[in-house]
Amino acid sequence: TLKGKTAVVTGSNSGIGLGVARELAKAGADVVLNSFTDNEEDHKLASDMSEEFGVSVTYIKADMSKADECRALIDKAGKCDILVNNAGIQFVKGIDEFPVEKWDAIIAINLSSAFHTTAAALPKMREAGWGRIVNIASAHGLTASPYKSAYVAAKHGVVGLTKVTALETAQEPITANAICPGYVLTPLVEAQIPDTMEKYDMSREDVIKNVMLERQPSKEFATVEELGGTAVFLCSDAAKQITGTTISVDGGWTAL
Ligand code: NAD
Image: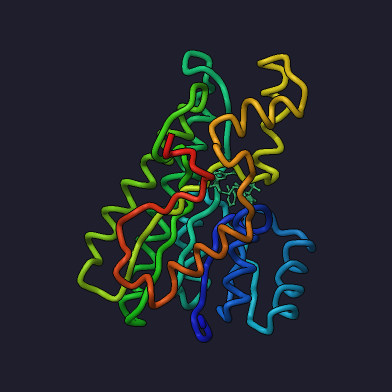
């Protein structure tokens, strides 16, 4: 059980972040939800989750594209025993046409934010005498696809940062690992379908089966609950000696 631990999950008002936050709350952790918005729904998400699982859940607005806001999130969270770096965006275009501002935003949100939150969280974990860092990388942290230069570069960077974090904390009761999901049907993936349909002149069904799940041998999307379960496992005592590594949840993608 994670009772008494506080988990900060970046980018958690949707998709995988929300799924991971829910599984951590179900396992007894208090949770800090985050995104860059500050809507009524964001705070309602927190109060509903608190009621559902009987743990404390708060929502803190912070834009993960900004270094100072990343650090302020950890500051405002109070405790941070579990840090899940999940916030991420995608953009698909050939390198020669890739907009510079999209490159910069993806590197900032998908990679640099994890550096800033980790830097701010480590002193808290050291003081608490326990810590778990779970970085949500991607199958694209281990392999590449065309037209996703910034995303693939950022996710490979996250895997590298995870290894360095693990080495710097190797003799402490702190672990750092990366989860590498294959395709999960979340709003991020949903948003890629129209572009891909246009690029390949394909129907929605063909894009899902022949483009997205083409590299996922299971031919099934992974679910946000499965990713949450993997994060809970990495926070368990059984995973104490698991550090500096990646766990693929990709239906066999990286075995190909
Ligand atoms: P999503 O779009 O549903 O969720 C992304 C989350 O990040 C949202 O909560 C969004 O509000 C938040 N976010 C975006 N920009 C932000 C910013 N500037 N500051 C703070 N929060 C911000 O997408 P998802 O599929 O759930 O993706 C979550 C993570 O999982 C990403 O890092 C993504 O790269 C990774 N991932 C997703 C898949 C997949 O198939 N869905 C596969 C591999 C890896």
